[in-house]
Structures are given as C-alpha cells and as structure tokens.
Length: 279
Image (cartoon, rainbow, N blue to C red; front, side):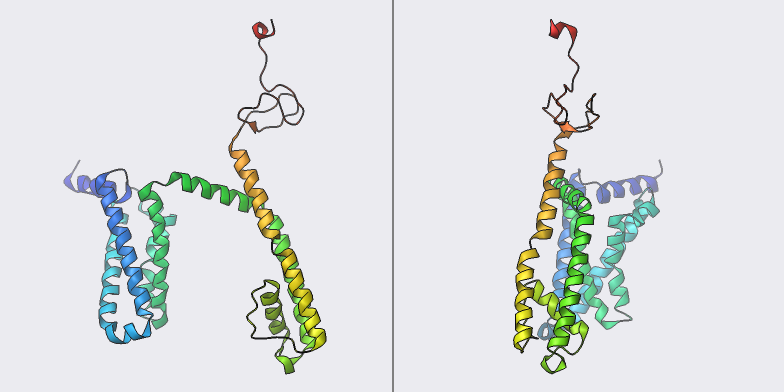
C-alpha cells in the first residue's frame, strides 16, 4: 500500500468512524464548529450587533465556510465511493452547509440560509451512539406511514371546512369589516379553527359572530383527531416490535407476541407438540 493510500485510509477512519478516539475527537470538534457558526449567523441577524461588528462577523462566517468546504472535499477524497457519499443524506446536508454562503455572494438575504447548518447536528446521533433514540424514531416513522391515509383524509376535510367557513364570512362580513376577499376569509377560518386567534380580523356583525362561535366549537371538537390517529398507529407499531414472524399453521396469521403459545386469532397452538410431550 502506497503512502497516499495509507494516508487516505487514515483520514477515512478519522472522519467517517466514530468508534476510535481520533474519530470521536474529530466529530466533537466538528459539532462545536457548527454551533459556533450558528451563533455567528444568529448574531449577524441582530441589527445592533451587525452594525457594530459586521466586518468581524463576515470574516468569521467566511472562515467557517472555508472550513466546511475543506471538510467536504476531504470527505470526498477519502471516501471509497465519493459519489455514494455525495448523494447520501449526510453528504447532501454537508453540501447545503456550504451553498448558502456561495449564494450570499449573489443574494444578500441568502446568508440567513446558513442556519440550515443546524441540520448537521444530526451527526450527534452517530457521535454519542444513541441507537435507542434512533429506534424510537423508527417507531414514529412507522406510525406516520401507517396513519398517512387517515391524516390525508382529515386534512382534506379541514381544507373543505375552512373554505366553506371563509367563503361564508366573506359573504356575511364583507370588505367593510376586513374580509376583503375569500382567501382572506379562509385565512381567518384557519386561524380560528386552530384556536390560534391572532385577532387581526374579527367579525363585527351578529351573524358573523355566531358563525365564528360555530367555527371555534368545531375547532375544539376536531383538534384532537390527528393526535388520536397518530397515537393509535404508534401503539400498533410498538406492539408489533415485540412480536415474532411466526405464522399460525391453521389461520396463517403471520405475527404473534414473543411469549405467545397460541394464536390470538383462532386459538390454535403455534408450536407443534412433540410425541414425548403428549405422553
């Protein structure tokens, strides 16, 4: 093995592996650098700080961008499959940590997109090896997939309700009371139905106030529906995690509790009884 290949392999172990002291130190320093860059972006958004220290903040930001760019290039260099890394989840996130600074050269407001670097903090799951938390996240994803159709139907119903209520408020109240268009009425219906209540648009007529009362009661009635749907799917996903892929020989139910001896559908024995056990 040549010296360049040896150096490349050492870089790969340091950058991509977290089970070595050097890899853990690298990831810890990387996380601290990401946090520092986020602090700089946040401070730059404060007008008083920006006016007094804009030059220093800009220098720090370009320094962080240069470090992240070097880190991204080194990852591409030492990765056995650079394209696979470039199009992976973390590879795309690493690239997004650099692009906003480049876009800021063309668009001044694009510098605040640098806050997207907070997504890179997802690497903390690799550094700390929080596998139990990732396992719980899989439960959430499974529950979201299982409740997708029900939640889509729910949101379609909500969209219909806010459209109807918003149109009615536009007809009842009209532009004179702030409901200048149907989209404005739909905005009011969304704010009221979700019990947020900004108060920037309020009904003035008795009929409009009666309709808003109906909207508020409807909001309280349905606000817990998606929570119940998701909770039911989450409970199902967690129960399924404690089940085995053991098929019932009689009714063909494919999953059962790990300690079950009989099928909970037909009551038949899941495991064959041996001749000596019958005796």
